[in-house]
Length: 262
Image (cartoon, rainbow, N blue to C red; front, side, top):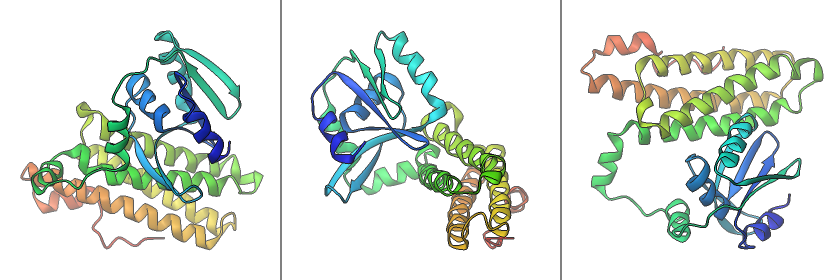
């Protein structure tokens, strides 16, 4: 669906949530995102500037494998789940709560935090992990786009495996940023770092097999290294808060001078 068409649907004022598929991910924009966040799942909303229309939007995105659980939640609440097309689903009969304008402004036109708020956020694992989540989400999108163009003999073998690694990382980081009961721990961070290194090895294999271009391989490696650096920063923050020694932290995650590629 074209950008203009999505905005026309969103501005129609109907009591519904429009789910739009963009390849491997579903997205909800603006008012649909607000209703989705209010009634279905409190996924982290994001803002995006669309150059084509010179406009900011608020959106929420989630992978295709989350759709069945979302359908179940909607139907259990008495909403109607209608598949308009393979790329457009409508959840109708949704109550319209007040507060959309304020919610949209908080997402898209977020005010600069005061110094005290910044200090408070820096001491909160959920907020500290948001950059890591955004980084790995962008990495996940990039990997899906790259593997979609791979030769068939690798697309459904090695390609499926690295898509799985990337999706797992994105989903796990999302959970850690939204569920206060699942704050970061050294073991979890080490586990995600190990998955990122497995992803790096498989990406190198694809590059050596000429399945992806060197430019894409380099860009993905930079994204993986950025993600690992954010995990290292979170790990060091967590261990310092528990008065752990520097030697203990370095045994779990490699230092910053780890080579970016094999």
